[in-house]
Length: 305
Image 1 (tube, rainbow, N blue to C red):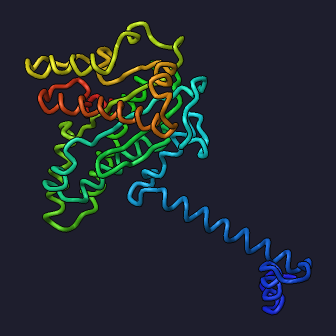
Image 2 (image 1 turned 180 degrees about the vertical axis):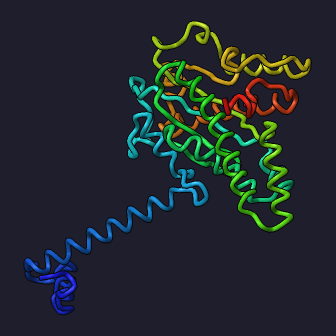
Image 3 (image 1 turned 180 degrees about the horizontal axis):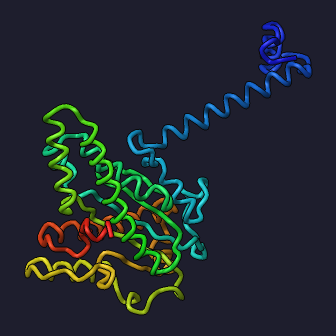
């Protein structure tokens, strides 16, 4: 019998049995109950997925932080548990990404340009790992650590792809717009993008096993990064390429992190790594404000070659 043709009385009696009534479900009733449970389960999963996604970009929102914990090797049930001293998790890299001057772009060129800026960066990180939009101009990317060269390549790829995506979006918006003022704003935004005025602040932290720690990073701490940047800012010294100086990417020993956070939960451990990456991103952003010739600014001509 087709599910749509099952009589209402059969369904009603099935509900009574499920609520504690006497008797057993007939084969027809069992078929109907299983179909209903499957349909409700699919709707619930779809609702959960929708609630964990950012409406504008389709990236995970803050609810997606649990996915990062899963990438690190912690199950959902372990998030609130203390981390045992012998705990070992997967090697990972977390990138904290901040869109520079997003509010200024909104005010100068209109919110359509700001939205295009956000979507361009979101598209650049969407397929790189677990990507989240944490707030208005803040995004996170978490991926398994695959070597120090991979981290450098990923940083460059995010920057270059974001610039390409933004140029493509702005060119399309300018070509399709008929309203005079909006078209003028899109033309200004496109000109600014071609001059490299749209850029990202990017900080990252890799948590690796001790044997995979690079020699030059073993004695490198976040405190030293802060001191190094504080020496740069007052004197307006040109920044070296970030991949060479290591100022905005930090590599830390998994064992050290676990020992430091042994009395905390898996969620605390994850959030600590994110805060460290975010702090390095803030340092990158701050130095860019004081020194506009930061070498991490991607020039359009270089991207298009």
